[in-house]
Image (tube, rainbow, N blue to C red; front, top):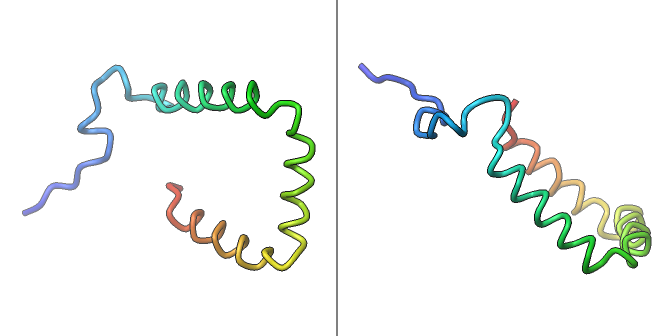
Length: 74
């Protein structure tokens, strides 16, 4: 007989709950660093992203997004 274990079974009690606080803090830290470094170029980067989605890369980018979403927890 096998027992299914959730991914939270191996986590310390302090990291269980509605969210992963360590990952959220890491994301916030990296986001702040990106904004500090690239803040004046964010509009330009967004425009480049729109062009990529609308251009030749669009189908490939959509496939990559779909693949990533297929692995997301629901």
